[in-house]
Image 1 (cartoon, chains in turn green, cyan, blue, orange):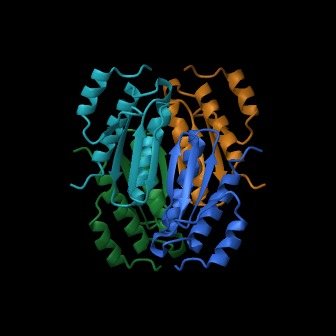
Image 2 (cartoon, rainbow over the protein chains, first blue to last red):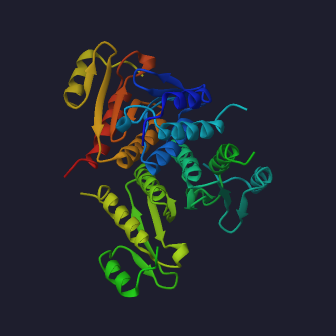
Length: 100
Length: 100
Length: 100
Length: 100
């Protein structure tokens, strides 16, 4: 999988304002906050299955109801479509956990 | 934990129409259907944590996007408040997975 | 994926004596017992990820420390190599949970 | 839960040489390495259930087959018996994942 072109990455990232782009690492990061740990870990489990299915795994850290996910593609030394796909899936799954 | 009185159980179950009461076993059962396996297992993980936390575990079976949960309290030989609490938690968590 | 030939299935199953073959459904079943629910669900999570990765899902039911897994391939109307692979993975993973 | 006395903490930590003690934060950290992501996340699920059951949650981060766990008790502003218990449970559970 090839690294995204700069223009292409920019337009994709513009559509995902919740993700912060670290230009130095060419990685994106988002923090998710849940009502409690059970919801946070349930969300992590869904993403864990997705990650292994697509053989593309996040860097993530969790403390109680907070989860920080960082995505980049080591083999490509930067962002690829795999990162965008993971981020999109996470965003959609997180919609279910948002306060009404 | 004591078995619920029949009148008390009846009024509680009336408020949970999705659960079917098996009077012979004095157990309640509900089937949950999800979009896919990832969502089903994510839901199961949240309930697994809840179950262990409250030391009250379901009988459950899963095939792909379907999950059947049966609740009863073996020590009480029938339904207790623990079963009602588990069912209520499951119902609330499942709201997040319902089609809009 | 094609259904396994009878002779081929027989020799594969002979190497997995813990799995019971239901000839009517052409499905295999094994029961796993763990020390407690936490270990059982941890094992289930590993298999859930494996299942989705290989797009081949078990029929399974759990009560506390017991897990029953049934495998067959609906599209093939019987056992396929996918079922054997899932069973082998489960057997290997379960080795970690066996009493020493 | 009270913060462990320095002498008591020292003797407990001496028995857990895999955990590194950050004296500034009064927190302990260990890195775990698994064969793959499925095993790492299976282990995390077991600890997630344990954490919620005991209402004591880790700071943890994961990348593929590596998991770093940091333990401290915010309310006590340092290590408590809860941290030692979590670390002991994690160590015992990890024994199952060690190469033979």
